[in-house]
Length: 349
Image (cartoon, rainbow, N blue to C red):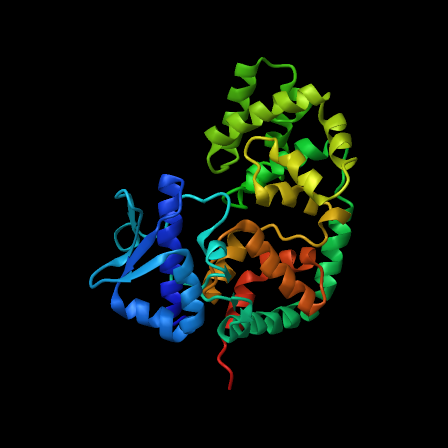
């Protein structure tokens, strides 16, 4: 459970990030309520570290000022009124600019810092150690299941890999039950095979995909149908599914393969990884495809991350401590998240 000073670090960083997102520059000062200034100066940071922050940006104690970031020409971002920025910020974040190496966490949107100026934070490390213990228990109990899943995944490679797992991704995106209506429903699946759609005009193809996605009860069928229709054109330019698959699998290294999948509409960090993890690709055996189940565990633990890579790296570090692959932890989190949360919720006797 984070205390007040930890929340105040998050509020400070959010105010600065919100300002920079809005105006494209760093603020020169932040007006803060006196109690928060005291927390930052006397408890979390200490006088010396607080002075380091003050060297970057002026922190002004002012009654009723709930983290208002400003510059000299009147631009401002009021965290107390506007809250956390609603969009992601590219480039340097406030926590890096100020010298915090952090993994945010806590009540709602408040942080626990794993390290502060390079020094470990015991509260965050205690959370991680508890998770490691629970993962170790479940990994041991489910070893046979994991081994079977590896065998099944390794046997899932196919000549139309890119097209098939694109369909699979769109069927589960937002709700995994969509796979039952498309991937495991031969009638619907046959309607959207690449070779079937290849005989249609773009307009006809879009209509068929949309109607099939609706029949399969896939979430956001109209948007995903448009994505798949656009992706059909991209794959067609590559020479079709088999040549697209050859191109994907000939790439060297994880990052190249992720970049390949991210060229397709609808594919971000999670699904660009997941398609290769579905076939137990050697380049992705130490990867985590962060999905809603993983976020559910993070939320239960009070962890909140600034970036996708931070969340992936945190869970990879847990896997390494346990002695399992990232792929194995990903499957445990996907299939046993509720069990994991139940075990994490048990109070020590």
